[in-house]
Image (tube, rainbow, N blue to C red; front, top):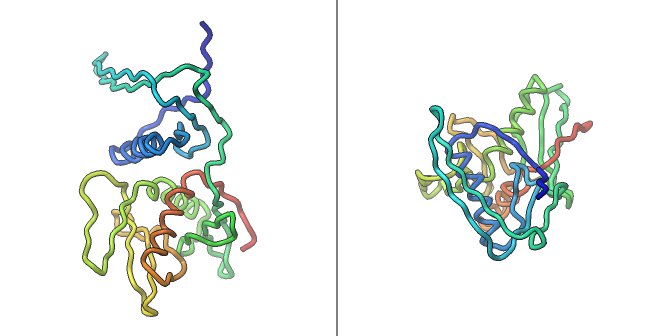
Amino acid sequence: MSEETIHEEKRSRSRQGLATYLRRIARALGRGEPVPVDEGGTVTVDPAPTGDVEVELEREDGTVHFEVEMEWPDEDAEIDDDAAASRGTFELYADSADQYRWRLRHDNGNIIADGGEGYSDKRDAQSGIESVQRNAPGAHAIDVSRDEAAPEEGGSDAVFELFRDKADEYRWRLRHDNGNVIADSGQGYASKQKAKQGLESVKSNAPGAAIEETDG
């Protein structure tokens, strides 16, 4: 029997990061959508409606192994190792003050997220993008005008805060646990529902979005 490894990776994750990744898998399974194999969703598999699941917990040489394995007939699975993971692109550019900034532009041309600040070092701007890619998908959304608090369980290391600005429009900002705002909506919305739709677009498009350097 031949065996082909299509994708393999090993990395350290926080408990919250792992929970976010597993929730993405569970959500895709529940919706009948292709399941993201990697973090960016560039490798997916569309599993059969029914399959075998094997769960194994073992201790070996001072390490605990917790493995969940799913399998189904090859002919019932569709694998895409070059999936269109995102409909957005991170644009990295230098502004008129020679500060590095970024924005997340949707394929429809709209800017759906903004870094909100300039960085003197390009690497810091790139780290800001990576933080959004890592934290946006699992971040809870709360309405700060109603003093809502994020659930203690799940989520990521950041929270989407919905609020009204001075023009009485709804905006959102993505605040990290360290207090820093790592992204914002960059624009106001006429309704809270529209603002929520905007942040949901960031949640789905940020993880797999390519990074391109532009002229500003």
